Length: 418
Image (cartoon, rainbow, N blue to C red; front, top):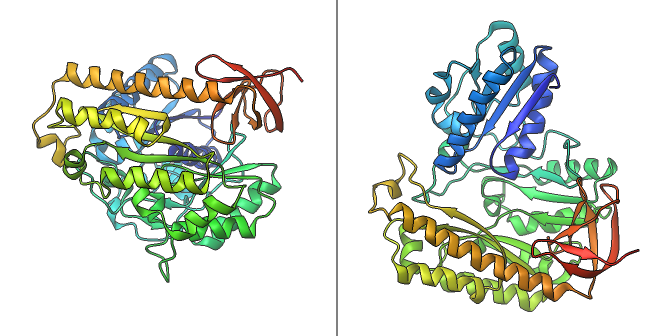
């Protein structure tokens, strides 16, 4: 074990923040430390974190075990009561050097009220690091928190209200990352399409994307993480249609394909909005590939409602699916709604995943014979421009090249020999 190991659960945002956490912890103390940066999006994510903490306590009894992240912010007592845990640090403080120094000297850490945090450019936003260990793509945090209250979601209680990074800070961070050799940047956050609402003049997220591409011509590729289609603005559509450095892949937070379920989720879009968005984007960029998040078995979901969600895969032309079996989060309105039986939730999640796997196989088959641009990552894999996984054995991480697709295995593309 290195001086500080960080075990990351959950989203890309946590992956970005974990690197800042590791650096702050290493600068504060020489004591062997394991930090668990937790996720609260499902009860299973919380269970896995607690299981990992117990295992680390058995296997590395001399290390300090520190817990942070969304699950620790929402329910600090659940973790502080574990005998293996040395301290719990709140989400707002987890990368602050002063907090880690105080923990090393006084052995004290606190979990503050996340909703009291209102600064627009705190230590995470715009990225606190100029490299991310283990990654060849740079993830840049431009926004944190969420002002919406979807009935199934506990994350606002772990992240607080929406807060945006000033555009100048974002541009400066991406320039620094490019200077350090990164070819691709991924904009990330909790609700990134809400970026700018709290800044002077209330600029839009699409405007930010346009400014990045204009101000950082040395950036080869720009991606965005999960977006809400209903918040896409004209600036974003303009970029999609006119800027080849904006990658042809969008991941949509859809959650369901049934209008009544979407209302009960308190989502901001209707089914027709999502279908129309995909059609509009494809008219501007025919090679665009879509991914989507779905929740299977949301309370009150009938077979007919679930069938509408299954149909979204074809109606929107989706390729990459993230499927979450619904699990009630205590304190959320959905947890008080009539629940779908557990076996039925699992069956629906399985059916939705199988539908997604079939869509992916069809997409992979359609790529055979084409010439694609690939950026390699670690571990012998890479990503095409449309985010399709590509096998890249014997190539170094960070290399960008073009090659012809020779085949696939149902999950990745294989390239023709050099």
